[in-house]
Image 1 (tube, rainbow, N blue to C red):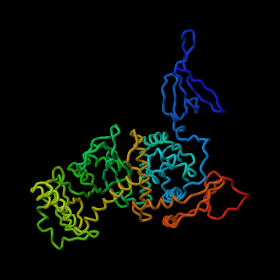
Image 2 (spheres, helix red, strand yellow):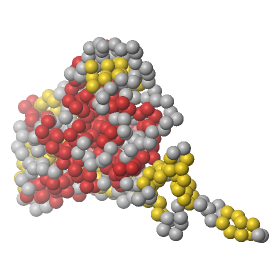
Image 3 (cartoon, one colour):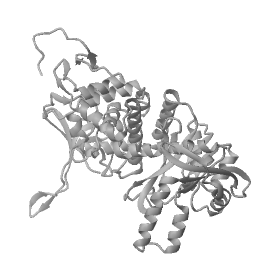
Image 4 (cartoon, rainbow, N blue to C red):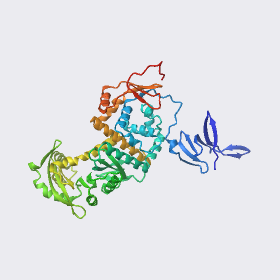
Length: 527
């Protein structure tokens, strides 16, 4: 057992383990085994703080370090040596905070059982507004109005990992899913039809979710994230994580079960070809869940039957359809699917005129470069532009493409997640931190989708929104925060979302209060 010595310096109590001593040649010498524990946070639990470890516990009986309780790690110790900035970036974080209130998403954020909600709000704002690594969050926080909105936030780099691990405990993830799904149903749409697809999250960190994936011929070490979206709105419901070496077709039924656990009585799924397998089809029919999917090329028996019945008469005038400026021929037939081929489904053979030209041109180039044989060239030319869609419901031929291409919402969501919502790259080293990171990412993507739909801006254009708003500054005084003028582009986005920019914010009380008229002037308001 080691004894902790406590001492005071400038009114602050510190702790240390004194170095042991020994005699050598009649002299007392000290061993180099003293331990500086740092500032005493709580003697009862043995909690300390120092710059190297942050908040931690120390047990003098065992000499072991531990993780400090959340009530200590969630709060930030203010550095009295720093002079806080008085000119802050304002527009982007103010706009975002007002949008969160407008969409009533604050109820979801505050459903996460973490002691310091300021940290959740502030880091979520960082995920929406910035694309940099989390180690830069504290620097951004100090120069942004978000510091005034959420003054208790702790975005010190070492604490962010602890925070992500805390909110990423799976009991907390499930509580978040319940609140998020409830928000979608109450504020967006209650339609139970879903889109299910997966995406790879490249990751070389060694924990059970990392696996070697061979997805569409691309080999990588990754985690597969299975995402379930609402078909009508494109908003995410929830996600599941599976190792990268788990094939998609084995995850469908569990995804549907997970939806049911969160109160979504799924009656229709639009799935990628990777989920089409006999066991999955049997399960969907037995559960009275309708489906729509592209037929995978590996299913040669059904593909050959559809070609045999539909291809001879496919290119007729009555089969020509126009979908969003693309011209295609569509013909349909009934097929038997499932393990015992006892389920009736409807197959739609399509021939995309533009795609056929592109694929034929590519095949010819490959043949010229001796990348494929003449036999392979012949097969490629025969199959160019052809595809098969399978559905459990009978659609009219002209309806099948609009019904199927709703799945582009999934691709749009993955684009939003990976490009502007911090989904990748992964910079975490534990499963709990991974779940915490993905929770923030799905919240950021939800907010970004809301803004995109409200402003009718695609995600690539959304950067213009926050760049223009970011350039609006504010000046911090003792009792109020004066806002600078916003440029015309920023004002247009305020108008589109119905957000009113205040002239100043009153900070004389416990909360910031927006004001929209000139205040009564005193003798001055010192910075």
